[in-house]
Amino acid sequence: MSVKKKFTATVAAGAIFSGGFIGLTSEKSPISITAEETQEEKVGVDKKSPENVIVMVGDGLGVGQMEIARLLESGKSGDLFMESLENVGLMRTYSADNAVTDSGAAGTALATGEKTYNGGIGVDSEGQETDSILDLYQDQGKKVGVISTNTVTDATPAAYTASVADRDGQDEIARQMLEHQYDVLLGGGADYFSPESQDGTDLVEEFQSSGYEVVDNESSLEDAETPEKLLGLFNDSYMSYKTDRDELNSEEPTLEAMTQKGLDVLSQDDDGFFLMVEGARIDHAAHAADATGVWQETMEFDRTVEQVVNWAEDRDDTMVVVLADHETMGMSATEPMDIEGLKDIEVSPEYMAQQLATDEETGTFSVESVKQVFQEYANIDLTDQEVDQFLTKIEDNDGEVYAAYRVGWEIGSVIADHYKVGALDTDIRAESGTGGHTGNMVPVFATGAGSEDFEGVMDNTDIIELIANSAKDNNGKGPENSNGKGKDKGKGPNK
Ligand SMILES: [Zn+2]
Image (cartoon, rainbow, N blue to C red; front, side, top):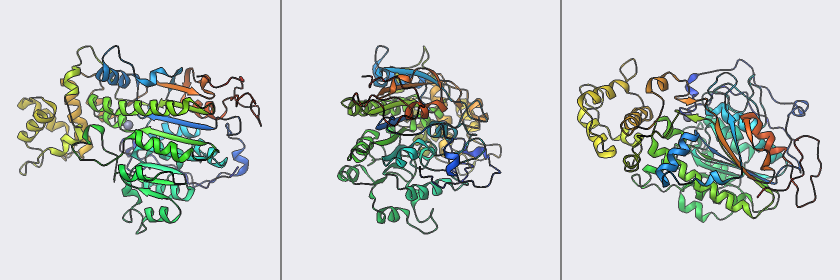
């Protein structure tokens, strides 16, 4: 097995939603894995593993978020598609150093089977490098890819593809993605590939000259057909919230369009593939207690799950696993929740934050603009006292107004209170290193080849083993090259 040289990880830079601001560092010096060490890995990808694996991560997608999406979308008798998958379980998500994980440690557990500290990416709790399941699939000559509505270099996709050494992590991750020649990389984060971030080097040009087709909007993605390697960067930062795309005249592709292209590229030869697809902005909306955003982002994710399962349905060689990395903000659908009021909101709290006007004299937002924004975008008439409370919450201890995303969190919480959405108190969020993640168990759904072992209560470190070591009938030929690991029940795909 080839072993990639990576670096000891410390903190994913810029991972504002991943709890990266905690500032954990490892005192270990960079360690590369020796061949001897890799033999101790608990999983191996071999002929017994499913030919194609698609892991779909709803970031921050707990059962409360699912219920809010279901109620807003189709009422109490409606269903989400993902609920129809036949194998269902629950998963614990705690990290090596905290009962509540960030997205970096959670992604690392899912991708490598190792618990790490919050802020760590692609390393175990000692800071030692471990290969991800995506690397193991690539080592077997299979195509691999990651797709996210986040920056393609942020926590979850990063945990599958790279490790970072310092606070410039996302720049470094972009360079590692080029070095490892992953076949499909689609998402936001163009800034991290730019000459400004890369000491004058245009990383996108480097990708092109090493054989990648590069696309940057919905139509160029569509026109790309099926190149051998594809890089798509559709936003400088995160891809836009679903709710804001009309307002912003966005030309970004949907998660469904990115995922369909990913499947087309990765499945063009018969060697098999590993694909991770992340609906990342469910978590970002949940940080703001934004039920409207959670609904829109969860429905996009659910439609993508349906598309992927339909694609896989006629095959007996493909496993689809749908799960969350953790829950965010303890969100719940309460009895008095105003469903119609929430459905009428047409932009995200972050967009609203960007519409606020600063009062030159006070240095903070003007009372009139706060009232006007809440009225125009959320149909809420705030009293003077409520505006006062809001203005107090959006300033740090030094009286400085927080960045737009955190102002958005406070706007979202005012809206959630008004429309009776269940969510963590803003003081608890302020005290959380993760910005309001919780330790609630999250749902896991699975279907296809080898998926019948996804049941009961699992730990997030179990997932990689359940994928790689799952038994597969392989059209009645039985598993070949079995190494005795895993649970060989000799069952065929469960359809
Ligand atoms: Zn988060």
